[in-house]
Amino acid sequence: MNHPTHIDVDGLRSIFASRCVVDDEKLLESFSLDQVGDERYAQRPAAVVFPETTDEIVALVKWANRTGTPITPRGAGSGLAGGAIPVAGGVVCSFRNMDRIIEIDVDNLMVVVEPGVITNALDRALKPHGLFFAGYPMSEDICFVGGNVAENAGGGRAVKYGVTGNYVLGAKVVTGSGDVITLGGKRIKDVTGYNLLQLFIGSEGTLGLFTELTIRVIPRPAQRAIVLSTFSSSGDATGCVAALKRELPNGPSSIEYIDGTTAKETDVSLPKSQRTGIPESVNAVLLVELDGDTDQTLSDQLEAATGICERYNASILERGTDSNAMARSWKLRKQIPWWAKRHAGPWQTLEDVVVPPASIVELVAAVEELRDRFNVAIPLFGHAGDGNFHLVPLQPADMKLEEWDETLHQLLDELYDRVAKLGGTISGEHGIGRKRVPYVRRFIGDYQLQALRGIKKVFDPKGILNPGVIIES
Image (cartoon, rainbow, N blue to C red; front, side):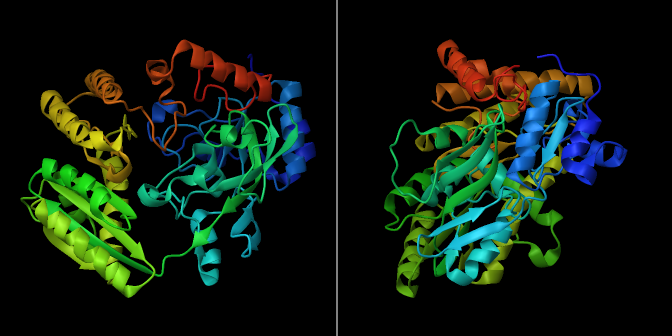
């Protein structure tokens, strides 16, 4: 698809008036990159628009088809794969103004929201009703619900509750042709034709733009508790994960893994009042969260989890229902990506590999081997309970950028080979975006790739929605 050198600004302004920005250089620059971080991916859009209705989005898409201008949908810009990075000279469609919680349907245990609702804002609205959205990701303070659905995002509680897609029951979508389709609704069961709703979930804005979402919510657990354990051996920690899943009667709601060095360095970077005090000898940390509806249920869970951890030679650092202890433990885990980003250098990558849960022992061992062989620090952390790990190779201080670029590519090639051999793939929750497009063929065969291209063509015949994301344009 050939994109215009200059866009039809008058046409855009006729739709959006002052909510079309073309001459604010600072704002346009701020939309040139998402949290992928690597400045080499940055591309400046020609305009940013802020729709407020489905009709405006329909008009935008039809305008884009007429003019051949690419559209990049954008939520909070918190993505980590470059999926919200625009095509240079294209238009960013920001959902910042579409932030209404349209309905909280307590009887049906469902909510209807616009895509720009911040995930934690939805949680705050649900709390007085004793409900919560269980498919939330770890960036819930900043991410938009629409972005969560577009990525099929997951989070710390996915091991028990599943990911975003498990809770999306309906959507209003503007396709790449400018048609409005309503998928699903307030129904638990629906086998009327192909499941197009699940096709749009996780499609990263390449097939259509969500304007309304129907999400299933569940009763909020009455009680929560944590066990924060340290291990002198990563093998003990990963072995403990399988035992926790297998033996806990009600299952853990979260099992988060952190390598020892990363845990210690992140901990000391926090204010003293927020530190957990990770000992120097630690090689791995597990954060286990439990929940239940009664004190007795939670007490039994806590005793069982503690016993399992101690059986795998763990030292217990925090344990119980104290809100401060839980806040400290989760602060440590949530701070790690930001700590790693500060230390990763200008050409950075936060990986999102996922393997069958029983293969995490081999995955952690493989990453440790890559650390030693490439002589590169690699913070390793993530959702051990569902096999989804994040890792961030850090550029050595004495290595020039050009050498680092070559080293990083070799390291990632080998990492992905190891992941493939374990039956895994390159993204569990962050998506392909622009960053992982060159590696897609390694995990998707020719027939499947052609099927993806065919699906794209059906819903976006002129290729104006997020071109270059997931598959090459």
